[in-house]
Image 1 (cartoon, one colour):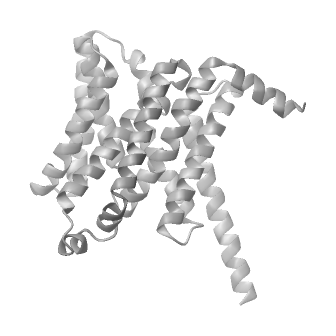
Image 2 (tube, rainbow, N blue to C red; image 1 turned 30 degrees about the vertical axis):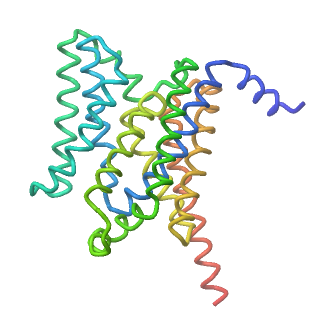
Length: 280
């Protein structure tokens, strides 16, 4: 056996690494697929906004001593409902996101302080801690990613319609408001799923960066979505292996891997365009 095969078998022999793979790879595949809709709608920061509210849910869970995943889910879904309402009330997209951003992070820190839990205890949630997941936790997160994938499959065509032209979608009879809410709820579920695996502060990056990388090389919307999913899954696998052998943090390794893929995609596109110009 080669050294690479031995290292891979050693990696898979660890139960905690198998749990990390089970939870992280599905989230990393689904997140960029959702991000394709978000980027097309020019709402790349929506994941960050909901992530900040999820942090408030974590603080709430610490304060009242209940499951922090439940707290993050409840407040993330509440933010998903509140965000479209704020936008319809007259606040522009960036102002409504700012309200979610700052309100969520302030509430999270407030709840943390009131609970007596040090902020260091929340670092695993902020930046991800997939190596500490039990099999039940990993299976739950993978199931959540599967649910998000199912929702996207059911609503794919209308979601594409509102992503490209919401006004035209309304004219054609599509219930755009409901679909915007559906998309925001899907983003919230991705954020909750990525809370333990990639981290609240980093999961939004995985929703956006692989999409940016795939769009450099793809000529179609569906191609960009599938390419982004492949980049996300590949970066999750790379990040976990790198974190295991280099003793680094998985969440940051995954997102940095995605950024490296973007840089590589840009270089490939520039080289391809240069060759085409020379041939022409």
